[in-house]
Image (cartoon, rainbow, N blue to C red; front, side):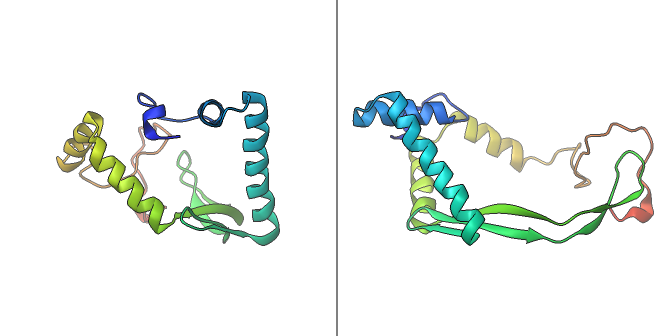
Length: 148
């Protein structure tokens, strides 16, 4: 399976992966789907039990605890307690990072050039470095909120 298997895709689905692997190794899509799902299940089960999964030359999945913290409701500006939660993080391995960088440089997609040009130009809308919220309130933010 290579990047050329998905030339016009911005996002790849499990179904795309199954079709590509199935075609490449000559198994039916049904059998290939079972194998792919077993691999994903093994990853999740390993994280639940061990909280860390290291796949050499690929990367490391790890479960990390995010502590409870105070936040602010963007609609009401009231403080709310955000409970602790566990999140899965991924850090790509060195070989994966190098391979991705090499493939990106080889492909030089036109969309990437446009994106880079857009990112390098100062934007009037984002010059204050505020992250847009999902609420569209006409009320200005409370200056004492410190952006929380």
